[in-house]
Image 1 (cartoon, rainbow, N blue to C red):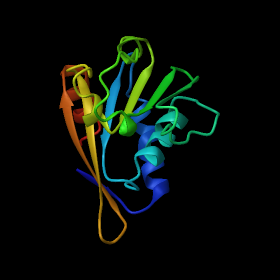
Image 2: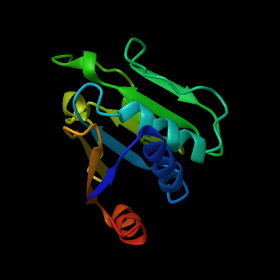
Image 3: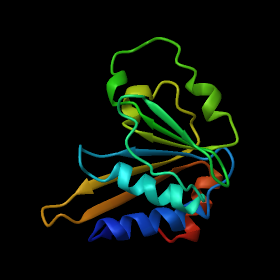
Length: 147
């Protein structure tokens, strides 16, 4: 677990984490509204060399950014109860990095191997990150970063 006291610390860690990611990497981000999921994703994008401003894909469901690797930024919040084919599996199998906010709403189609990150907003406005590695590649990341 890691605790960050401000948004810049979260962005800096996202940028550092990005240097360990690989084509086809999948990260899920759980946390309440305002926990910092999109802020953290901005850091990942920065670490992937993305120049565009990264913001929440709430209304578009997924935004695609081009960098050293493509970044597929999902917000599944509005997909609760949806059962239709959305084509996400193709993105999960692509050479990009997938960051999925609100993964609970699409858990049935998420690949088994991924890095699950839970962000908790604390009373003092700091954020605590908990990491669950699912698969050897993600376990290596957790060990390298001493999470």
